Structure formats: structure tokens, C-alpha cells
Image (cartoon, rainbow, N blue to C red; front, side, top):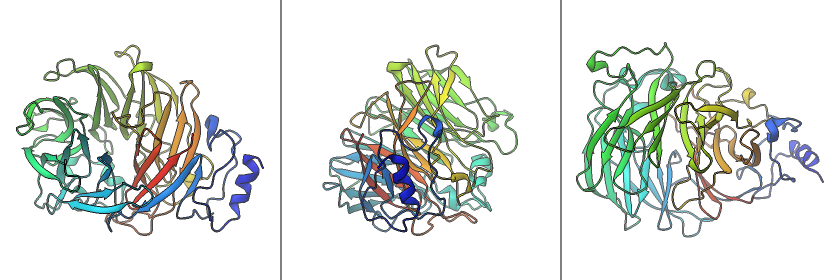
Length: 453
């Protein structure tokens, strides 16, 4: 049976009994831009284990009854999951990835969200900040993405803002050994893989939104802010005026450093490359923004230094493609002062995703962390409504999808915002060197998958 015949057979199935239904053939849905790909019925049900193509489902966890998950980290056979709406971090025993066991829960207190973290050498750096989704007053999901942070808080509550550092040598415990207070609404995402400096996307009082903050960790129990950098117009307290049009948000989602370069994603503000040879004095090398004409939402900057490329994902944030298609770009960065987009990853196309309830489009990328699966040819990406996609970019001008996993709709909505549609929202993916994939969802818990490429 060929791949097309197999897909046709899936359309009429109400349930699937296999734990990882695999479509035959080396190419995945959406290969070569989706040309000639058979489209599945949008209304065809997805079984609890999802539908896999060269990806096998191993297990599922509701994370101890807190199924809202964002960033996933691994250490000493345990999985750490930061929550999007619950205030805390769940720890799961992953000695047997086919049967994850809740092993602990840490909270920084009511009102404090700790959804992003970094782990290295038995230390965990944790983003602390306002649980902003419970402090805003929007009537739909887009409001979260289309308003600057400083003007979006309408319901003030107590929270803690800053960077906490934890000893996790005992995997089920987060023993706090330091806290760096950052007056403002807190940290969004951060990057640290060991070493002296951590790179934070943090909000400071007087600023419109998250900016770059460099923290010196030479004395791990006394972290120190040594640099800040922001786009022009963000420092309201200094009299700067924003040049962003209504409905557009300038905010650092996060920066990923590589060598003496830093690569930043600024939501509707585009992509930057910085000279960080002196981390105390980061300098802008270049700035490119493809919004407009594309809708923005720049989320994840993944440098591939061995190939002088960067993969940059724009996070989709409007239901039923109301803003158009969000893309993941491949950039040629051989000349860092002039980055050039040369291709986009093919969009999933086996279903009419824009017609389905909820948001459709990219969310995040596996970030090639030390100790994880590392490749400059194979890219793992998560999608709203379309799960996990794996791409072969050996030919950077003609990337191909080679594997996929389509998730089920979550059992219930955890997102407290009004008028949010219940739909799959694969958030982060962490891939081990063996191809074991831990995939979180804003509402739908944690799936463990095996990449079979």
C-alpha cells in the first residue's frame, strides 16, 4: 500500500488502535511545500495517541492534574515542566518514559508564573513574573499578543518578579539558593547552558515590554545584572516614544547566543543579531523585520553556526488564519550585518487547518541544547493545531517535511481567557539524543514520542 492509499484509508476511521499510526514513504505531509499531498477530512477524529508519520507515540501524562505545560527540561532522569496558567513547575519521574510519574511540584506563590526555565549542572534557573493572563482583561486570545505588557495589566495582584536559582541535585526538590529581583512584570524566557552569563527577556519598570537583560552568574548565589539592551522607543520612563502601530507589539521573546553572537526574536519587531563578545556591552549588528507584509509574532531564533544559517519561527496568534499564514524562515547569516531570508519551512497541509477551530501555525523549535539531540540538518518544530513536524534542511533552499505527529484535541480548556477555542496547542518539544520527544501543550498535558527517522 502506498502513502496516498494509506491516508485515504485513515479518513473513514473513527478510532485508531495503533499507538503510532505511520504513513508509508520517506516524505511527510507537506513535503516540498505540500504539493500533491492528500488532504485528510478536517472533521476526521484524531485518536488520543495522535496520528504519527515516522513518529511513534509512547505515553501521555496530565502532569499530576495540571495539564497546562510550556517549557520542558530534563535532568537526572526527571522531566521539569513549566506551567502556562498554573503557578509552578511540575517534576515527573521519567525513568520509564512509557510511564511518567508525578514526583513533585514547586510554586513561587499565588500570582507568580514560572513557565520558562533553564537547567545545567544540577542548577535550575527559573523565570518569575506576573501571571499576566489572570491580570489582563481581553475578550479574546489576540489581545494577549497585540498589546504591550506595561499597558495590559488591569487587575493588579501580588507576584514575584525576577530570577530564582535552584539546586536540583535532589531531582524532586527545587532548593532555592538565590533570587535576583527585577522590578517590573518579570521574565518571559531565558537562555543559560552553564557558564558565567545568562540571557533573559525581562520587563523592567518604565519599559513598555520585555527587553534583553544579561546576568552575571560568576557567584551563583549572588547573580548580578550587568547589561540591558532594548529597541528604540521601549524606554517610556526615559521619554522614548514607541513607533509600533496599533496592534503590534515590540518585545523580546528570547535570545539564543552562539559563540560571540546573540540572536534575538522581538515578536512583531523582527529578528536581531548582536555582538556579545563583551556580554557587559552587547552591540547591535543587524535588524530585519518581515512584518509587514507577514503577520509578525517572531518567537524563536535558532542559530546553526556551522552552516551560517538561522531558523526563525513566528508564533501564530490568530484563530482560523485571520492574520494570514505565520511562517518559519530560514536565513542566510554569512554576513551578519545583512541576514537574508532564503526559504520557509513548508506548512502542514494534510488537513485544511485554517478551517479548523483554533489557531494554526508555528509555535516553537527544539533548540539544540547541550546534552539534547543536536543537528544542523534536522529541525523539530511545534505547531498550533498541527502538532510536531520534523524537517530536513540539508538543502536550505528546499526544506522538506520528513516526519509528523498530529495531536488530539485536549480533554478540557485550562486557558482562563474568554472566547478561546479548545484546540491542540503543542507548545515546546525537547528531543533527546536517542530521538525521544517530550511535547507539551498549553491545555493538553505532556506526550512522549519516539522519532523514527
